[in-house]
Length: 77
Image (cartoon, rainbow, N blue to C red):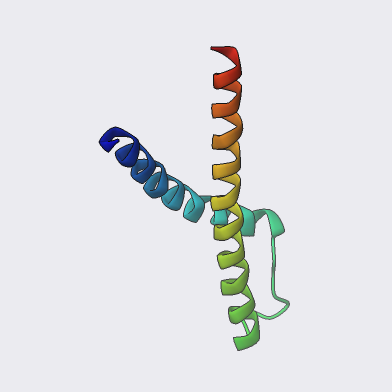
């Protein structure tokens, strides 16, 4: 039971860190640019909202991939 709990805690921390990195990649793929040199306050808020959305989306995607990989492992072995 302790090993399962530690493994899940490890995956929680790992997916949290990976989701932060993947959120930056998500924003880079969107390539949102401003026409002016500096960002307007509303553009700053929008950028933060998109970053949070990217984090949540990445976190959920990591767990979905993890479930799929474990299901495939279970069927193969």
